[in-house]
Length: 264
Image (cartoon, rainbow, N blue to C red; front, side, top):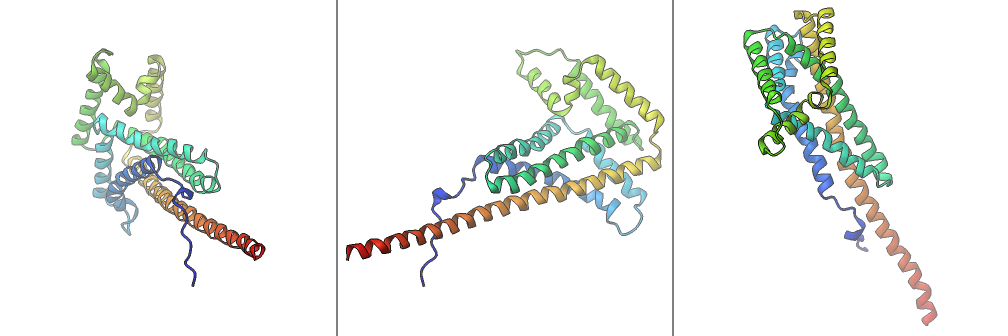
């Protein structure tokens, strides 16, 4: 029985820094969401109506993330954007595998970012405006004062610490750096008007927590889908390379037969 030819190493796509950055970033974001799932399961998968304790535990976890250090938020946002850039580069190769596998992965990444910016961030901001316990109120006020101190410090380009602090604020709260002060004041006033028209009552707080938890579950599904699609792409490209190697070997055999007859 003839041995199955192995595809040449040069025929396989090199999976290097781009793929590593993609998988590392997706893994980090997925790990953060799995941590959130430990509290979300009390709201979504408890098998009965969520208890007040489950709501309080979820609120405490979300506001802890909301008031986390600037470095963590900046790192999370970087890991959220890295897959988009790496997948754009992969799709630009315009191969069949890139279009189908990487294209779908890119759509999944954009959906995750859409859930984060359109649901998680606005909901957490509303929850932080009216925490339900004194402990959470103190936590939110402490974080706000720290951010205010960083922004109140005059920016000194020659100081590495000053430059690093502003860079972390840019990655953590882009609007505070990119928006003009007048626009930022208008946005803050509009948010206060929204809270007046839709106050954070206990029922409204529970709704925000439920919606945020559901968004996290959808994001987990999308991120796992990205990992599965990337594994499928590797298998498909290796199988395609193997079939091409077999075809090339068969063609060489067919071309060799006429040459042998001529030599006879």
